[in-house]
Image (cartoon, rainbow, N blue to C red):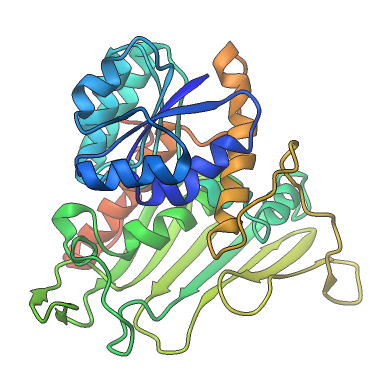
Length: 362
């Protein structure tokens, strides 16, 4: 599978080493609108085939799979162009700027007959995959309730500023798109399809001083609390805030008729997973062996290694799709689902109260 990668930020950091860690993929070409960046990335990766024209790039006959790791506002156009050119497509999250755009991407994927997937690789992270496996295996019995809380310091005044687009909602910025999108996918994949949401979404710090001394108006969110009704009868609470100094990581609680799962992870202290069946004396550490990529790659020793590992596992599980077989890889419909929840959450916070979530793309 000859792979062409659009985007050399996260693409170089995570996608490139993940594709190289999995047999069946061959990363051969890079594309970015910034000529110097794509050239430098190609030199670091040992790839001489680079481009700055994504429209020509997706049309190339010598590429089988296009990876869209570009800025969010470009996902829709690049993905649909690649599908129309007969390419398989992997698209970063969030799938699109809006649920409407995401729905159009779902339709284009269905019409193309090509393999498509959205980058919800956190399902395969070392601290979340065991939870997913337990729930899929029926550990909870009839699920009752789930709570997932995220904390970080990214937008606290003591933290260095992020890229300017992260503060701009129109460019796909904010942490509903940055963090909660993964949590929506994770919880709904395990516990049921979303039916309705009630939410509060806030921009706590309205202006941000950038490294060059300029000040930007912040239109994207730094804090959100969502209550989801799922079609399984489960109530799921999701919250995230990135304005907490000295905070990092996440914590999950999931309750059911037969058992309880309590997990934590992310940056900071090591991941922990405690479980118990209803008849047990109490919670105890879960001691399952972590899954590793089949190729046992020598992953880079840096902060992104955990994400590379998770992405590699997702890519392994996506492979059956290329021969028309079922795959557990996240679909464009999963990306649309998360986008629909986020859009409904914003409407709820604006005063709409409980907002129904459509069951399928329109």
